[in-house]
Length: 281
Image (spheres, rainbow, N blue to C red):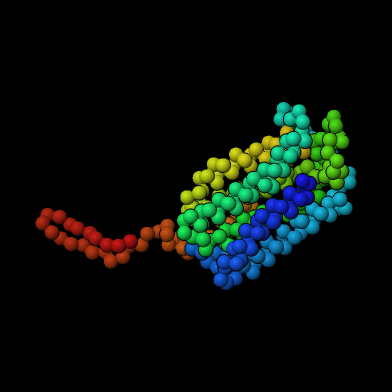
């Protein structure tokens, strides 16, 4: 399966889950306890950024830089790439593709769906999924703008076998790693949603998802597709957007009410050598 098909596959997984959420959403503006979603705004933003992301990906042969703009590397990146590169880099590339565009999206979507269903909060499904998709499409579109503008040569193009990969339009899109960016955006957004919701699946999302995201970053270097700095920046930006999208949708009034206990009906009584206080909070 081509990388184009895999990227379309992950968007279909996310938008398919999103459609289920739309089907269960009674109104465009929804407050599901801890998270608030405006279906018109968030749905429009997710759809537009997702459409642009796929459009730029499909037009990559025409808009990607044909010659490297950032052609030089550095000792640190060269040393790490040499130490992590697999004997057959193409196997590492296929592993990263399968994990970033298959395993991690299914983990993120599935964990949130199971949490909302098993904990009797299935009404959360739509809001959870739209925020997950929104984090992915925004982070992926931002990644494309940087890639096309920076034009960094991939490691394999200046090493022993420049013909290792046949997609010539991809040669100068090393900075920063889109696979790593997506993997961390998915895991961190799912983990943040689970944290805000206080889902029981939160430890599993972090405990399984983060090692998988780190493995994606490792295999992209092992495949000679990226340098260490490419995957480092991909992890940072993907994590930042993955955290920010759900965190900015928190229902802060409910969170504050839950956080700060308020005492009601407090009474004090005097008895034999003792004082009693009772109340509700």
